[in-house]
Length: 279
Length: 273
Image (cartoon, rainbow over all chains, first blue to last red; front, side, top):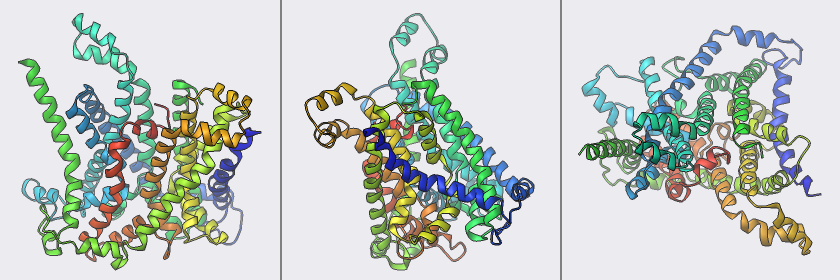
């Protein structure tokens, strides 16, 4: 009997998760504006694959996602290892550095816009040391600023998860390795790394998926600009659907994007089930 | 000696990192307490101008006021609704073997991971058709797509640690399911419920993308109002006002971080670590 207690949640998630998916599949096979109710088969998908603006934004998003992961992973790992030893000071520091992971993305964008505007601290420092810095006009500068912002935002997530992995580790092998004269690198490579392997893979996939979804921060910081130079997939889809009302084309783009995210998601599931089993 | 140098280097790195994480937060508060000419000069130290805060709390210039109230209502009802749906579901999943429980779990995970950009268009069309566009209950319902899967995953991981024998013993003693839940089971998983509520609250409080599309006038939460006022590029953004609103959006995280710090890894990884 109480088996059926899963039903209410399933009905709600079906309504908010599955119905939109079917609606999108329905729109994606109609004409680009999806007003005449004409079946065009895969026309929209072909247009998606040949739309230069979309392909640019997709390439940018994928590169961005891997780049921030490559920057955040070593940094977050370093913080976790430095904070490993118990102590009052370490407890304070680790509490403070996890704050960014709890802030709304829109506020992160706002924070950084305050910092980089001409009279903000970064803007003023840049005026002295790097006078050509102008994220509102120069695409590369905007891109590096977005990278810095994302590292600021999410490095601590990696620290949190890796620290949890380290906390659950058996410390005795490290002590005996130390008495046997193992170097710091050997201890990390052969004792610590195997213990945090699962958390590391897990959090990397999580960051990759979240990186692909980036929206709020970029919108607030530089509005995807200058021009279209920092337009990521989410921004592209938002413009095409709820602003230009290209319903059919937008739905096809969304499905394509969703497919990429779900592939990564499936990898995440495989990692999860290897760790502890599903339930 | 070598050890002392190592410790010194370690704390130099850590403390400078900590300052880099804290400074932007301080700066936002500093700007929010500064007058407009002072903000133009940098506002590294606030000059004690409080009208941005009173303006945001009163809701002048379209940011704050009702938006703060809406954000509160949306977040609190999201917690309530998601828990009501998820606690029974998580109980069923943690106690019974299903034909397809692995698939249900994966399906829930995919909903949690779906990019909001893929959902805003169907929601806009559906919500208009159902007459819940620009209503608070519409926003709460939309957030369920992320909140319920997360809550089910998290709660299941907490419930799995409570042995099934407790259920059986209680039922043999004549407890009804409702009474067992109220008297025994829910008190046992209270930490799990607290952590789940925290994550639902944080998500609903932080979300901006979907809210900005499925609301228009009466039920915009604070974040959705903020994005409009920040979108006026070139019109001169009211940084003081925006910072005060931004400071309000970061308050729950700042207040709860100390309490939540031990549970964050669990919450961010759906209870897997």
